[in-house]
Structures are given as structure tokens and as C-alpha cells.
Length: 368
Ligand SMILES: [Fe+2]
Image (cartoon, rainbow, N blue to C red; front, side):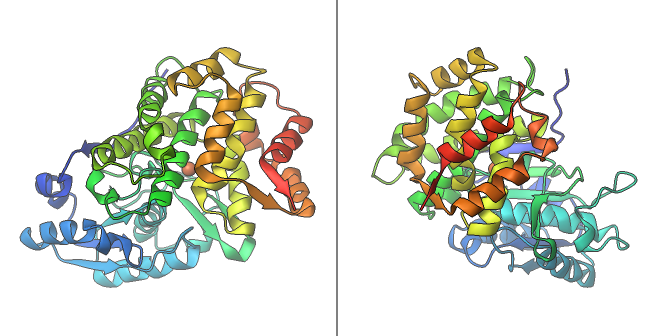
């Protein structure tokens, strides 16, 4: 058994300012990779740039990362990093910004690799420039994983790239959730929930690496009332939600995500469904199928979340993210592709059949 997360992770209020020394020690010239506006609105961009200015580290901001970052965006950001002679990359935002930062860090030191070739398996492990991750949503966990999910629109592919890129440093501060809309907090928290559930219902789950999802699910269960309530999330819960998301990231760093994530990518790519709900729609039916193979694990997940049975689990998810409608043709097309997605199917802790896959799609997506 092995447990591996080589990222220096700090979780606390005013984390960026408190760990200015660590942030300044990562490199000499920084490219900040972020989205259009949220890092400005929640104060994270200002926190980082203040520290860099005070430490006399030159930096440039690339703020064009879209949801589901594309190979074209990654290429453009890498070009900016090269022109600026950056030697490290700071990703500020949700999974999109941090994942893009990782891909830029890889391309920066591999000038022979084009962004459109990021999904190709290299003949040997590729090096990357150091990455700092400052998450501002409570779902991605990317600050604690080696994964970078990038979309190549030319071949209609949304997938993780086959490179290991753990951030050198992660600075996690719950206060950045203060300006987030409630539904964004809910959507990203559902993603974190899926990371932990998929990490346990996974052939790579073991006694050692379960310490993360089992602890994280208990914390998530303590937040579920606030997530389900109509009221805004109390600020006292921000740090717990962020912390849980980081733990969920550490969970999938050991096992990788499983079938619900594999199913979600088509829904995002072809219907524009945001990542958290796209995963969440498949979660209850996946748990139901896995209950045939590992009933004890499913019971454990439900009890950690404070739920009686799978119906309660399914109702909770529905209350959080609603339902998803698609066409019969699309649903069949998605199921057909999933049936040959061995990289995810081989992670199921049992012999999942074609009928099981059809069942998950029928239970999860309404035809209308
Ligand atoms: Fe995810």
C-alpha cells in the first residue's frame, strides 16, 4: 500500500499572506493563470499579487481561462509564459484555472510538445515547471492531485492528460467562497462528494488510502444540512468545505476517479452541463450498482454521510442539483462510448455489465 501526495498544503485563513515566504520561494518569475473575473472578485488575485510585489517577484496575469479549458487556451497561456520568461505558474480559481496552470507548466519546459498533443501518451515521463495552486471553489481538489483535465475541441475530447503534475505548493483559504453564489458552492461540493465516493467504490481503494475519503465524507455529512438549506452558507463552514474538497482531491490522487466522472465528460462536452452536476447525476445509480459488489462499502459511505439508504442518497443529490434531461439518441450514444471506456470500467470493484451501464444511464438521465 502506498500513499503519495508530494504537495506542500496549507489550509487556513489568510493562507496566502501567512505563507508568503513559501510562495516566493517557488520561483523567480511567475505567470498567474486564472479566469476572467472571479479571482478578482473574491480577493485571491489581489492576495497573491500583493505578496509577489512585496517580495519583488515579477509576474504577469493570464486571465483568459474558460470553464473546461481548451488546448488552444493552454497554448496561448504557454506563449505568454515563454515571452515573459516565467519559471513557475500560479493557478488561481476552480479546477479549470488550476488544471490549465498545470498544463502550461508542462508545456513551458517541453517546447517540442504542442498543446494539441497533450492527451497523447509520451514515451517517457515529462518534466514540468513548479505549480502553485490557490483554489477558490470547494470541489476540484486539483490542488492535491496530479490530474489536469483539458478539452481538445478539434477531436471532441474532454479528458485528463496522461502526465503527473502535482503542485509544489497549495494555499487553501475558505474565505474565497464568500463571494461565490450558493449554487456554485453546491455544485462544486457535489464534485467533492463524488471524488470521495468514487475513491472508495474503486479497485484501488485500500485500508491506507481510505483514511482520506472516510474522514472527508464525515466532514461533508456535517455540511450537508447547510448545502440543502435555502439559506446562504454560513461563513463558519467555508473552511470546512474547502478542507473537505482538498481531502477529496487527496483521495482521488491515490485511486483516480471512476465511472461517474467518466460518464460526466460527455454530458459537459455535448450538453454544456457544469462539471459538479454532470458527475452528480450519475452518482446514486453508480452507488446502487456497486452495492451488488461491495455492500459493506456502500453502507459505510451512507453511514458517514448520516443517511439511511441509497434512496435517501439519491433524494439528497436531486435536492442539490435537480435532474438532467437529454435525448434518447444522445443517451444511447453516451452509453455506447462508456461501454468501451476500459480506463474507468476497470476501476469498478466488481464485474460491471453492459446492462449495468445502461441501467445507470436510464436512472440518471431523463429522456425528453
Ligand atoms: Fe471532479
